[in-house]
Length: 513
Ligand code: ADP
Image (cartoon, rainbow, N blue to C red):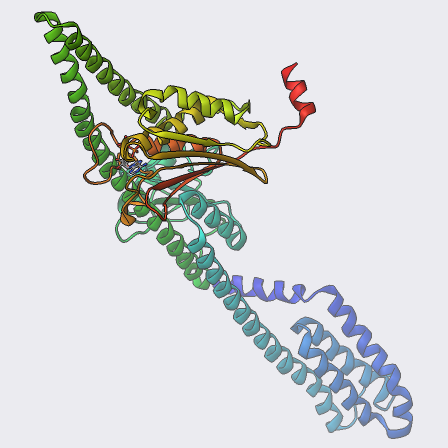
């Protein structure tokens, strides 16, 4: 079997040298013989044999055994027929000429064998270099890839390029159960028997399928994707024969690299899921604690005041004070519920932004009107330049954002202080600032103020820590940003930046029509 293969290989190599090399060798010897004719007349026939031998040796350095042998035979025959006396016969008289005749073949054979050996080694070295490069490039690309899908894309591309076969990755779902279709190749699905083979490979961490001793009746060959802490799954490929020798080592290393990258991504996903669970558990507890605490106070106020109104007779001024208490507590409840609803809209991605052209003066007046009771003990200074253009915003969302900022200022700034609401337009961006003379924020808290349920330690009751995160969500829905800093003389300064077009009067008219 092996001998047959070796003969086949030599035959293919010989033919593989190319018809061109055969032609070249015949032509080369023919032309050399022609060129040697004048030299033969001057110097005799021995010099011709050296020149022909030299040409054969040169040919042996770049041609395969076949063409070199043809060149050697042709040289010997041409030399014998045309140059060795008696000319135009194949007769050789002298022993040294017979020796020279044989030398052509020996030199051709030795040179040819040596050259093809050197060439084979060269090819092996080149192959090895190519593989090392491929592995190096694969390592680099896999380390850059983030997420299972990106790793798979790199792996599929690599296997197609270097092994010329279409790979099919069957990954597990995180609970050690294999999917039956490729994660990136949804169109590829395993048949029942193929799936069973894949499962066997996954459980036994051994290859199976075509060309292996295990479950070999299927079309694919299945390879386990090894992992130190978990196996990402199984790789199926259609092969003409199993890899062997250097190619097998290359394949195994390639597969290990892919497996490692997939395992890294799997572990990353698991860690993220675990973090997410801890985070949602924490959020649930915070929400539960804050809601039960914050709801209880206004509800208790409403119950107490209404009970007192129902069961006792009070003078008019006490009655009106009790009604007032009920109203204030209801407003507080309403605000809490509003914030919770807005938060859940943001969380579920249900916020749809309806942009239209508005005058910032209208918006400022509306917010001031909404908060007129809270603002009574303060002086709200609104500054909007006369040339402030109309801005394209979602009126409802921005009204809520400004409401939350100014409401907070009334909660935390000292009574009788000034609250500023400034708006300007600069180069495609609308800037809104809300400034107060309150306590500002502790430096350590500045990075967290827009997080859900964040409250500065010791803040007065009446909030869930949602107001500022809603401001952030609504501003970001406008593709804008919100930032906070402490003012130099004390107090906080919130700055909203929203990209908005400068209205084109013609467009406006069209929209109004
Ligand atoms: P809350 O509804 O609890 O007020 P917010 O998200 O609106 O929630 O505010 C978060 C925390 O930020 C508040 O608990 C408060 O401590 C602090 N805060 C908000 N606005 C101001 C402000 N203008 N000045 C000082 N502290 C503020």
